[in-house]
Length: 480
Image (cartoon, rainbow, N blue to C red; front, side, top):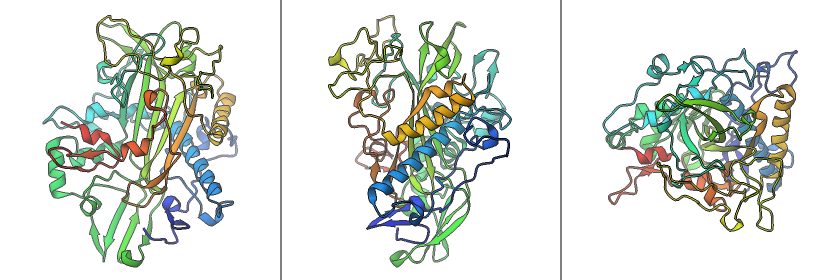
């Protein structure tokens, strides 16, 4: 796209991150301490729909590329924390955030736990998934006594036991880590309405190219142009704080882009491990799950990926969080830097082989009583100092105002975004270049790049066809 008064332009790069020169003002009252992010009066229960960036000329030192990137990275990391807080806020029965509760209210299910698991969306071949409203009004959410039995884990078998590279991750207790993906309403309904949940539906979609996306409309010479049809691709809903319109320029001068106030699509991936009496459950967000036969187990949240599609970055904002005890940092000598006061989830400081750090210990799943070998994990890339500074602000605020809260034991590993986020492209110059979650990308931390990997997502690929752009979502690639 060409430069307009709504875009950032630096040198020859089109930095569309400044698309909506807007800063969101959270709801605040005189009684709320501005540092208390756990208090609903400060409005952190609102899921942000945009980064809320100023014009480039209002960014200190914007003429210097390093300064500009640093500013944008801080903005992205702050957005990640606001997203994390709002999605883990206690929820009302309908899944909306309960603004009468603080962040860490007891016995409350969180907002994301009311979203739809991908297993409920991509169902068996030929079947149509339930509508979002059906799930809310009937089967879900259900809190059967003290056992979590709502959307989060209707059945333990609905969770994956392999990571993105189809390898199991075994914790220090010899238990598999489990993974589950959740779609918010906007993401779910896009797939549902476009019929992208099945091969047959995708073939119909690629034949008719219906205009399904929300949040962005394109007109050429006054004629509405469906984005899916224009670019032969899927295009999930875009998040915006308010309506805005801008015109293209040059060869694009007859095109008008209309951004509409809208909650963007959000997809969240959660990693859980089974907790035992050896674990300090006060440091984990936990749920009790009923197994077959009635036995209950505790599971603890160890990792969270969040991708959020917003107008400034239509390639999604990629955020990743971990529970702080997952694994130690790798030192410059190639050895983990051990803190003896921590019981790591994925490394036993008293029993590890340095030659096996970050290497798969089990290459296939064993459902029998076969002994599983715990993984030996260390973080390869240090969390950026600027991200650690933002972590300190949010973690210290939670610890100060709600000292019993489990959320003080989670940290942002990083946020990835494209320096060049031109519309309808994969973007480029991803920042930072490498980003890995030790519990989700355990065995490929040195090369892991969220956006670089997901930009390869296609649907209807195979039989000699390159397939179609799946808008970074591999879920569309694996339908039946």
